[in-house]
Length: 334
Image (spheres, rainbow, N blue to C red):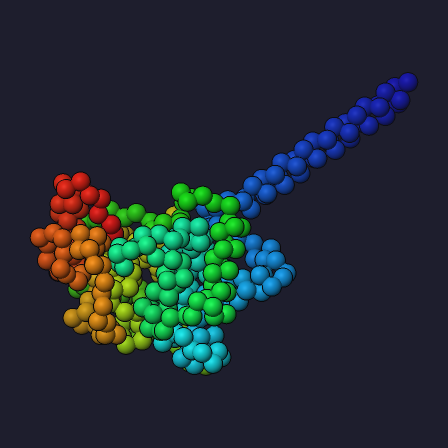
């Protein structure tokens, strides 16, 4: 009788363990499923294995490759006979991880946010126009035809990102990281020291970047010079670049939750990189922003809708500019 009781008890315990194990597995699978539908502290969960195996999927895959290897496909020495990009930079140099990295000019919800009003053009712009803004400005190229394989591929990729990311427009990492602005102007002199210590090892002492062995594109892109981004590009703005630098650079030391540079250091570094008095850039005629009052506070080309100088708009201090526009009931952009 005693042995029978022990046997029944063992069976009951085994059954209970099986039930508990099933519950744990179920919970883990649910958590995993939830994680695939949201962003995590390490980044947005984008599963490229779920790109569909059809013609749309082929366009998505090509669009992603264009983001990662722009110069290889459409650069000056690229394999495409229609070489739309004018330099050897790649979209992912700014929109890191093909636009999926948080706080790195993230593109996960871009498709759903266009058309939108753009102060730079002073009108509502389509997504195709926005894509061509990047091709013609930072990449120094010529516009992609609207019906081109490349334009359709990039838009397909952005649509797939938007449909598969499962994040809302307020998700952490979609927008630039917010940094406090100091009471003093950013200093190119301090930035030069930071550059020599932290950046020259990859981007070169003269900001020329490092080309790959085949010279088709860069391992590390140029930060100034005639093959770098144009004046008027987003990276040419001090605050905008600093917001990008804090969570992303140096690439092997910084993360968005454990930055290496302080906000003040990032502003100084951006001031040095974008100092047009000592660094040459491609020539640009049209700086746009037809409505002067809509210019970002760190846009350095007048005229402006406020009394502050070009130099202050370039390097700061920015708090007086913000206070001026706030006093008029406007929220300044940067």
